[in-house]
Length: 486
Ligand code: GLN
Image (cartoon, rainbow, N blue to C red; front, side):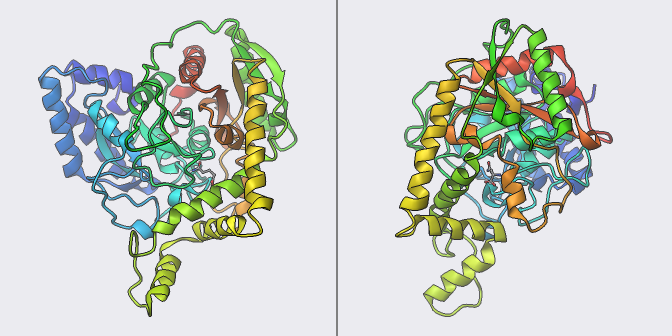
């Protein structure tokens, strides 16, 4: 089996047994990344930096160290800041920006032994659902390169699906891990809000942003997620003091009797028939594994779109104020007085979608509109979270589609941002409630494109979620399918 077809767990075992060195593994994936550069998955690679890290990992292996990911090469979404690579957040605003420190997730993975292959493409400041808002170039879907990989973590999903990295980090504010994982036929998880530190994640909407991971298997996702979670009280005030956990521990438990809630609002008219039939088949598979399906209701599902698209831009307008050409970011070369310099720097540095969100956010927070929009949205957000708590009285996990359709064609949504926003309908409720969520590949729809099943758990149910995904993957092989040509 080629190195790039190995799971993280299998690769880590080979590295530990010294059947392959960290340098060889890194070189293998760097060569593939170069060969498939047209996919647009990577924004930055630097062989010298990667190989230096790999040599250090080989030295740790030789010294008999037992870190869980020793020598495993991975890549990071360009939202995470890194000392050794530029960190752009997919924006011209931060072209060539070098952070003086590593994000906590990056640091923790490095401590666990991971080697960094490079930085992955994403929508500008993680705003988008198709990776087409990247200021550099769009990433493409390896299953059909005329289609989008999803977003905002499109580069992460494309890289893992095309075997340009065995696993990757990603972030999820309103679906950016689950949706691209679904569109690219891989496994992705976002933990409970607050379980992973946001330190060093370039902020979009701070009350929603969460770090997570993408890989092929639930087991690999569990390994990586165990490495990044844990309290970070000195650097992220919203990080919870719940201790780090070994999420692989629950893997293997029987799911007989597990109650899976199926929200009726997720199966309405908007759901494409091809996606629906793959989801129905996956639910049947869960019944075969002994789970019980329970119909539940999440009555405010539709409201999650207006609520999210008020709250996320509101927070973004505040977070992005720091990019003024003085504190951070691109500074216009030609300008008049200070105010003019701010205006020109921001006009040149930000793309259209980011500007749109800053304007919406500023509007909903402004005097006279705050009560009508922002405050109202906050109240409904709380009700959406309460709806989940009602649902979890009847079930242990919730399952449904990740997105209403399979990955669409590049350029298909054109200049219509609403088309992108509407496609977020099934991922936004879980984000607004701060719940852990996953996507696992469960079949194929139109154009032979992958379909993902969304699994949502109650707070801190990551272990249970990962095991439910693992049990499905023990009985099926969708997670092992490969796009042709990779
Ligand atoms: N598609 C959503 C948005 O554009 C979610 C993005 C994300 O989770 N980062 O805001």
